Image (cartoon, rainbow, N blue to C red; front, side, top):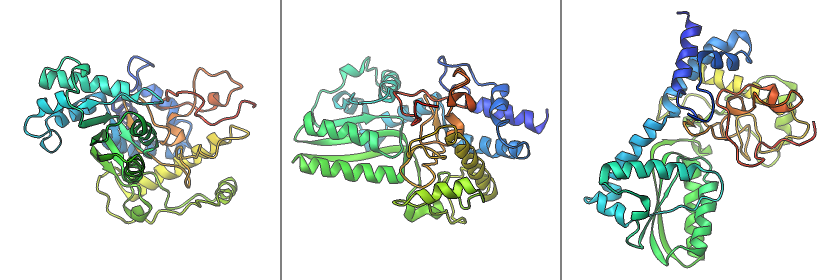
Length: 348
């Protein structure tokens, strides 16, 4: 088997359960269709580095289920009587947008049944002191913050502990969300404490940019359109990453491989933005964000691809009519959207 064929199969296998039952299962041909949108000379090295990254950051259903089973009996969280802890805990169902919490609650419910014999999440919540907010990943922290802020102002008790339980968290979003929730609780005159539990924490704070674990270009291509785009940003201008820092997690095979992904996903993201006459400012080449060139998330879960990830991974729809911008890019992990979040105008 050629190196290319082997890599196509490796990527398809890595994302084998992506949106299982909702869209066609990924195949090497599907991956090949996607990667052929990049320049021929970079396709094999891009596949090689991308396959490496997926091995560290793709969160399959099996991986997430295992994490939740482990957390159920985590002594620092649940103490010496974990099943008693979970029977007393209130598992919040307060997500305002999307379906990730409903899906994760179902996954967690299966784990509770196996580990503790608790048949339904409705059987939990015997006490009114401990609350658990479940989700898959904390990216910017905005969604979790919005959900819990509304709950704090309305239904939260005068005192209690809130555990935010996610598979992965980005450090800046975790800090920002925690500070926001503490202020909201104080303003509401409620004594609530908050703690985030995550199996994987990824660095993306500006103060730690040398150790960042997002796609954050160290250099940018010499391209007139890109220079013009960067020049439009006045409030949060892009600052290149300084290479050479030691990462906590081996997401990339090398600095060279990382820069290849950053460059190619940036070029592709700029191309995708050009398909619209008036794209949203939040729709940045490396993912939705108010900053720089985009969030640059390296995480994809079995449920969905976050819009914080590079546009080149998720943007587009093979079923879109030919006149529509979505028809101009073939996605690897087509995103399930909720409402008009893609940020493109309606007139082409």
